[in-house]
Length: 190
Image (cartoon, rainbow, N blue to C red; front, side):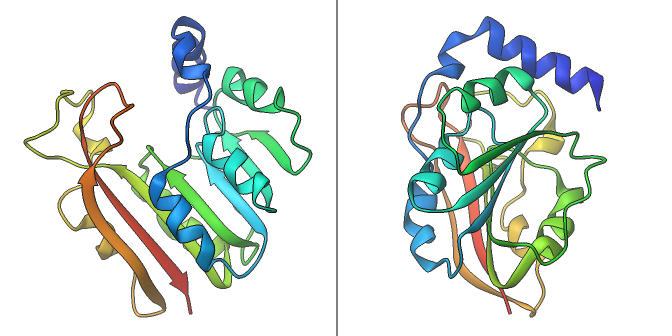
């Protein structure tokens, strides 16, 4: 486990109780979920599970992966039987190939796992990514510029074995602490 990241995120959740409060799922996720053809989902870097809960409440069996035990304990406390929480280091975790109908990764960026996520999709499975991008309108200075997407960057990760269902660049939800530009993509594995 990347002990440094685990300690950082556990501390962040413990010291910022507002991070443990219920939050709405991604608005883009609400739109794209209708296109899913199966009910096995993966929520990558799930945190306290705002998207996992939404998926579970819409009939999905969800694997929620995160590096913070504090966040996963909060998600477990919701008592949803169709969410399986897994404490993992995404640098080392091996995703099962051809296993998921729907994969979600929001507010997190690790370019190295995008290919693994694509491989974890079943045929006709959907991968939905939504995260922050580098832009002049961003109110929060980046703690690490590598965690910000470049303009149109998400499109570059997928070849013609995927169909782009949706792509957008937009300002994040108003309930976030800082106004930030985001980028999202939803692709279907052909």
